[in-house]
Length: 166
Ligand code: PCA
Image (tube, rainbow, N blue to C red; front, side):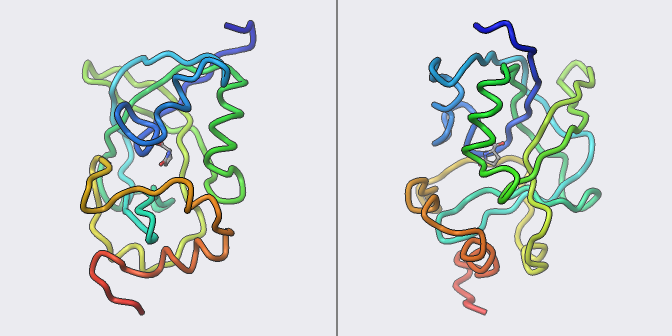
């Protein structure tokens, strides 16, 4: 582990344990990470699934949606840099510090990734409390990485689940 300062990150999507990007957190050449606790956001957020690749999006519209469940990790600056790379920060996801409540009621301020400029139509999707990648809606990492931000925004607006290609 390096001597750089430690940072708390709250993950709610593909970075969670057993999800398709969790290996980013466990690959030691990416830096240091340690699981701290499960938790949920103190604020409500809309968490929806979008694009043909079934990517989870936490939308920057506080007070709408649910208290989102996820996992708190402590990471070093190198690992934080890797996560920024994965989430294409600040082009695609932005991030901010939010209060996360653990099961014993402790409040832990953590970084989380969220989408700021999103198509309004995403607010008519089903709001999740917790994300899991399932067979019916399979997350597809390598293909989604090929998309530009504009293609991604266009694709987000299409409701693939309900097949309404607006
Ligand atoms: N990965 C990050 C943000 C969305 C995603 O799929 C996470 O798990 O928190």
